[in-house]
Length: 310
Image (cartoon, rainbow, N blue to C red; front, side):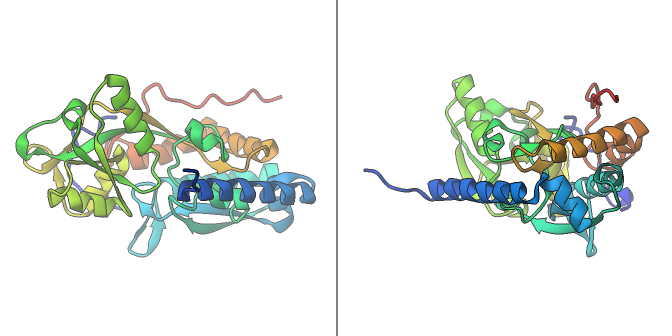
């Protein structure tokens, strides 16, 4: 994908009674599907790694609606998550004991965790932030990506900081971890909580912001900046959009895997470490988050710490 289509430099993307609720039903579904997947794992006598080896394929849940991680560009599936998945699977042969084919299966924010639990996918790469709440449902590899969460806003009234959104309306993507993270941050600061409004897509939330239906929109900086620019909006003093320089939460992206499946998680960790040691990881990262990308996020002192061999 040519970056010349997006000559914009984004200044502030530096970092970028008793009842049964619907949430309770969903949580119960997670538990049941997770137990079923673990029972299936036990039956195969070796977990996901043995299953992948036996089938000769690995099913990867991949997002397709969140640039720059996974999205369609002229019909082609592209993005950082897509390239990391392909690179990991290329390295997986040596740990699976033979060649395995890659099969992408589209997932959404709503299915990326539950499909790991149910066994419909062997792993999930869908810009999923590693949080303690999510660790109740699935496990994760070591982080393969980093970002942070600020608030996207219109600059017609000048620059804004996080404190300026106390008591204001902020849009969030449905099933995003942003809801809990922004509430915790504002509570810790003693600020009035913002009114959070959910949207089915990042594009819909950004459009609501441009229509002055909400005061701000938030998620991972890279996603909201990329989505806004690809929707035709511009950043900077003459562009009308900006993100808060201060962020309310860091983001650590991990590959989602089934609970209590250490052989599989270790194999994927080894693949990520091998990519780091070979320099291939840095090449992929620089393509999507380097200085010439739409949303530069320098690695800085972030690095993988490969396990000792032997």
